[in-house]
Length: 77
Image (cartoon, rainbow, N blue to C red; front, side, top):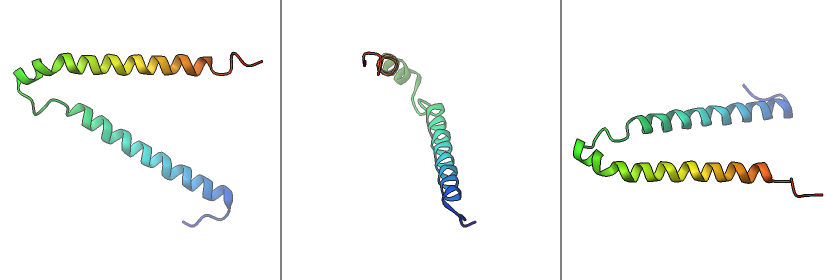
């Protein structure tokens, strides 16, 4: 369906973007649920400390970004 005006064009673009994001999220969830399925028990034991360190680092990075975002604009007068 062709857009009839600017509002329709924007709505169509947003709809396409949301669909693409939803598809990407689905693919990411599928990838995460399949992590480690090809590893043996011994390989999983060896990889666990690295995986934990990566997750802890990502959580810390997200927390720091959240703090930075919450402080944005507070010091402006």
